[in-house]
Amino acid sequence: MQPIITSLLDTDLYKFTMWQTMLHRHPQTQAEYHFVCRNKPQYPLADLLDEVNAELDQLCSLRFTPADLDYLAGLRFIRSDFVDFLRLFQFQRAFIHAHAEGDALHIVARGPQVHVMAFEIFVLSIVNELYFRRFDSATALAQGRVRLQQKIGQLQALASEVAMAHPFELFDFGVRRRYSGVWQREVVQAFARETGQWFKGTSNVLLARDLGLVPIGTMAHEYLQTYQALGVRLRDFQKAALEDWVQEYRGDLGIALTDTVGMDAFLADFDLYFAKLFDGLRHDSGDAIVWGEKALAHYERLRIDAHTKRLVFSDGLDICRALELYHHFGNRTQLGFGIGTHLTNDMGLPALNIVMKLTHANGQPVAKLSDSPGKTLCDDPTFLAYLRQVFAVTPSPQA
Image (cartoon, rainbow, N blue to C red; front, side, top):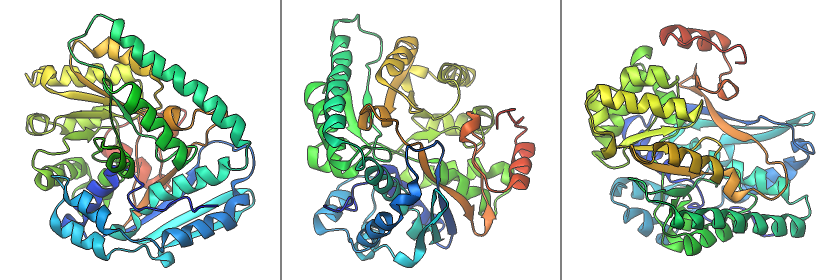
């Protein structure tokens, strides 16, 4: 069968935007990333080990093509020296290892962060597609196409509604947990063709280029987490990360991620300076309504007109939930909805809940104190407790 990854653009935009920032600001950082499956698969992921290793070999043979580099160079926020770096870049197989323990599949990427940080999305896409190849594809695709048309119909029904102050805007965020690369392309093409009034882009850089769409993305948790180990006072790591981002992009890519240590701790650092400089905020854990109300109240306290800002929701959404949030907030602020698994892996089969997360930087543990207890991730309970103490975060009973 054709290799799963055939282009190094077949990944999320925010991998490139974080990559560029770390290359310019902290190129010496060493990092470690671990693959984790949060739910129980229908058969052991350890069964995929040989195929995963073969796909990693293939991934490490790829280079950015001249066409890839030309496209990236055409993005206003990508700098020429980063493109030159990518011209020389090739994944090194020695920096990533996969092995099995019982039924569990383990994949660890360890090395210079400006090298290993780019493995994440490719690894998740590889594991997902290998896993779902073992199910009946004809049945899955037939069911997927039925559900795809239902989603398109849900969006098209918006045309008959009374207009709200701000439009509904949908983005594809489905690279990491897609059924397959071919299926993601079919889904994105269908939404772009049939719901262009509402479908505004994709996080997949390859599809954005090939289909003439806007590439969407700014930062992920790993970017902020890295600053926990860069020598700044721990209490100030969010402010240091946001400041570097402001200096790197100077007005571009202005959506900040809020839940690395929880929304309350984030807003304590997101003062008038940052609130004016950033275009808005992204939600990725916790109750979305509560989060949005906190964000709007924060802007109001700072006497910032919320109609000039944007709230982006991206936590486990489906179309119905996105529309509920739109109807709740659509007259009060600009909105965006990034939908992943529900767009690109809604095939009538239980989806894998897999991640590949940063666990250490410069030999020190890092952590995410999510507003959703199941998303809290840290290998070191002592550091996790210390982080909670520093930011006055009370652990949930479920954490």
